Length: 517
Image (cartoon, rainbow, N blue to C red):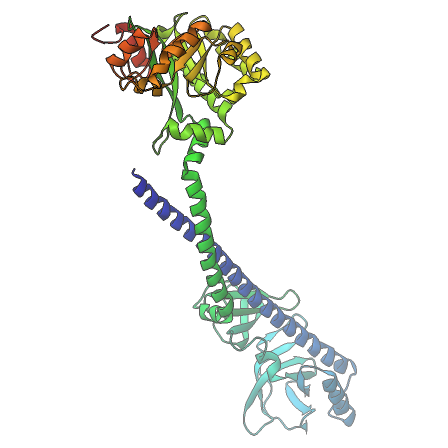
């Protein structure tokens, strides 16, 4: 996948993920508002049932004492007791006295003449109240109806708004009296109550809640539509939409920043140390006259699912991130795994050069390296390659190199001539090999001043009894010139590019194919 295609895919993924997160939070918040709305409806229904319980209790507390007084007839005392009882009541509009099924007198009309007996009640409560939901009030010129409750010899007419104002007007509701599995309509909009009065169902409304009182045998159903929900929560929903939009932008920016960091070269390299993105290639080191392979330099390479990264890029990053020893340990382990798989490499005099950061040359890392390579020290000769740096001249670094040499390792100064090492420092390091920097080799054909320094480097190597390897040899003219300068070994594209161990073993079997060899 190309970088542009990857970027487009990343942007799409970030957009979708941000939208899903922001959208989920928005809908979760809306769900919370809906639950709050349902709880509000439930609370209203509960308050309505509390009022019904209060009304029934008010009727009983009003009519029971009247019956206990054993009043008879519509005497002045009877009417006075009825009036006093009604005055103390909160919900009763009128009280009547009955004999048998006939009304005799009321607090409002006094003695009345009623020729029609009262009808059968719509229901009777467990407390003994006989209730007429729409009792026919025959005391007026025009026929009127009201909720009437009778207890023994007295009845009470309930104030109209005590029942009709149980719930806010914007919400349809229905109150029923429950007797076993049957219910009787009392007030509100008919047809809202489900057949099972102890459950909630969805009718033509989006929100339906049925509550039944534990104190009185009544159930109340309240319903509402989505439009009522949205109207009541309009401001909150607009605010939530705005916050969700801002949240989407914030999440998008944060995820984009995180993904850019995740896709960055630095992050890829750090992940690669843990996930096996680094691997080894091997460039042959040859005898310049015989052209036979006498060793190799282990070169680190990187490739992950996105692409390869050049050592010129990842080496400085590893140094900047202070992951040099972690990196070196990974390369050593990969190299040792490869050597274990290809037994053809095994030769006690075959040199395997491994590059080290100068900062990592210390006693602790030397001990770890000795332990790691212990099982291979009799099969190949390990060479520690380090560049010329000031940190190599410290006492701890020099002692670590000595420890490695005592353990059978050799030491090579890589890119020699590009640093500042002098003869006394080289003697301190006790190096076994000097590797001439490729810049000297590249300028040999032009006869530059730098190329004229090669004989001096050879003289330095002879002075400290070190071998010399010329780096970056690309053609036979350079090879011949180095031979004339008494340089014995070399490496470069002339002999082979960095390759796998499999290809290196094949090359060793045939030797390097050069005409003049």
